[in-house]
Length: 69
Image (cartoon, rainbow, N blue to C red; front, side, top):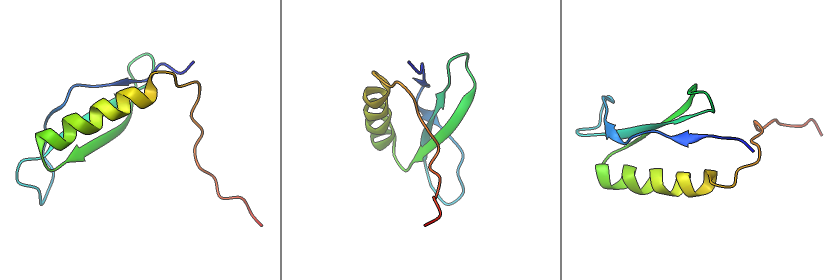
């Protein structure tokens, strides 16, 4: 099983957003793989919780690849 974890929600800097919040998803071993940024702390906390739920039983993740027709 993939062992990805959602990092802590915190205030971040992002151009054009007054008070953004974000979090990082980490691979097993602590390597960051993706950052998420939201316009409010409430939206960010909600998204982080949903992503945590989606990762609970995760077996694997594959990058999307367009296949030629």
